[in-house]
Image (cartoon, rainbow, N blue to C red; front, side):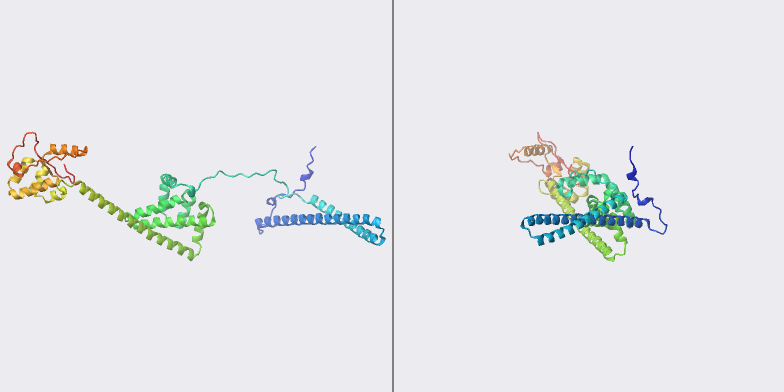
Length: 401
């Protein structure tokens, strides 16, 4: 039959006790537990003192007995009687020590079991989680990939957070979406601020900049406390909500400083874009220059209206008629400008063949035969083996046809 008597004297949980409504129950439980722990510590100290005292007494008894054995041969009765008296005294003390030991053992048996003595660890083990590399261990390519993936997944949530201004709203969305409390979200907001400033949306930029600094302050607080940033959301807003003018002033100063930096970055981006656009325009202009080094767009704008209409209509007879009505010198100048700018190609087939040879690396010089103003004005026939001269008209973008 199983004996359950050892479970009769167990000090059960304090939670089962009923307390008066005016008593702070959690505090009462803490006091009781502390008193029990102090009593257990006192008993443990008494046991250690008892063990030490008994050990010292035992050692002294053994020393005295050895001395008495040595004196048995010498016959010094006076010294022997003194040692015997001392030995009897130590034996009486030993008896008292044993009585104290029995008393302590009796107290231990009468002490009820409690949550601190009811059980002990049967075994213990230590588990180490698998190492996960942090951002400091990632390469630049890996960081960029991580940023792209994060933005692709949470871009709408980040933009939603960027539109809030009230502290309560910002805290709620971060508590409900703890994945936003990270460097990737802060980086996205910072870049978004620059984009908005480039688009001349300064008011919206300042709003998003405010939320950017909110995230930055939380991340800095986490670093200083060496905690997970997600655990620092509530402490940050609690610190802001308190009457702490110095902390709020520091936040506002950093916000204003960040706005200045964003405007500077936006200006640099705009200047770089303007410089690149000017280079592209210059490159396009150089690419469309004619054989004489003239820009077909500029030349076309200087042509008389009736000549422009001929080029736009691609009507050679009409062009011959218009030029024949002009003074030969003026018509010659107009035609020369058209040829130098590439608006007019005197021999299209020959021109195409020369361009093909140049592309193939043929360096043999080919003398280009040009049509004279007389041939165009008088409508003379081209010689055998040559096609009729053609011209190019200019599109709105400046390219030739």
